[in-house]
Length: 441
Ligand SMILES: Cc1cc2nc3c(=O)[nH]c(=O)nc-3n(C[C@H](O)[C@H](O)[C@H](O)COP(=O)(O)OP(=O)(O)OC[C@H]3O[C@@H](n4cnc5c(N)ncnc54)[C@H](O)[C@@H]3O)c2cc1C
Image (cartoon, rainbow, N blue to C red):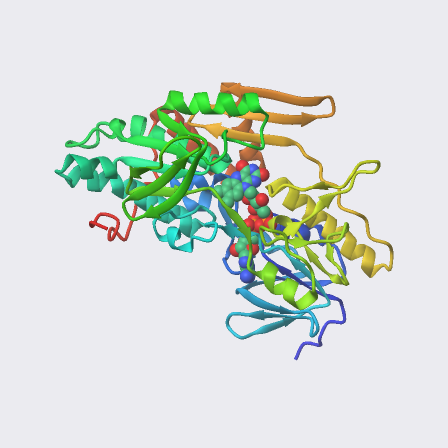
């Protein structure tokens, strides 16, 4: 029987951007790490919309966690879902009834969709967060065209050929642009009774502009590029209801109206993992409106230096000497930087040295619009650098390929994009489970 290790036990919940980076940073540390995730893969979420729109297949943007850490001897990978954390007993409880003891805990469980109190909308407007979500959206998009091909009634056919994306952030913009590409360039010539190019793609955003996190000129440029692709951009339009056949919209001015649509995608709201509320109850920590845990400058929970919370689940602030602490956005570079900071602080604690406050280095924002346009807002030491169009798309493409995990994934993605670029085709179009999208919901 193996002797129990005397080294500190570190449990990391979640192998997204934050968890992955924290575990990597503990590569040579004298600790025993258990890396727990409810899926068996690390997912590169920024390219998830490509799976949802049949441009890439799942293995191109996801890598098995077990394989990623095969050479890191201090890591044990476990597949399981954390349902409860008991800070008093220092244990993580799993859905299957098991319990994992820890000396140090890093919680990196990320975020989920928020339907602003209307969870019933989820059935009609799936959000995009996991591979399963992407498969479901891909299924709905492709099967809507199939249903339209079979439909004789013009009004009902129009419903199948109206695609609505709710939320004008980067995911919504990227989804809408690519849906328009599919309708205009991929599918024409493949159907006999309908003209896929006649499909309507609408982007509905409640605030006055798309890409709120970007400067106004880039928002305007993005909206213009979307319109050029054939996307109808409706800003200042608040969604008040969603059902199986469409949505209700309240514009900033004027009467509410209805859009008949059988394929709606939700890209509007994000809420932190439910583990946040559970952990707050157990530790007395506070959560913000999005359910994120308010953390100390060093990313630990108040009164619990043994628990660090990172990534989308943390309401963290960036601490730059001489400046007011600033909120950290929910983006992948922030999650990765927090993962490295939490790991470094864990090592500081093990050595009985003081921890350091988290400092976020913002490199800017980017989004792609269709197959050869984008917008980029880079933060440089000399200030912000804006550009758009084809150079921005190329920059976006190489940045995303560079940050993909694993050499194989980079090669696969570059190859798939190159072929899709020249042929306009989208190969990952196999869908199973044909019902119920084509039946009359
Ligand atoms: C569609 C989409 C597009 C995006 N595009 C961009 C972009 O272009 N640029 C950018 O910077 N950011 C982008 N983001 C945001 C970015 O992906 C997140 O900020 C980042 O993933 C946060 O990292 P994280 O480690 O906190 O969480 P995640 O990366 O979400 O990882 C959380 C992990 O925890 C696991 N998990 C969750 N709950 C449990 C549990 N109870 N038990 C066990 N495991 C659990 C999950 O399976 C997952 O592996 C995008 C996000 C989405 C959804």
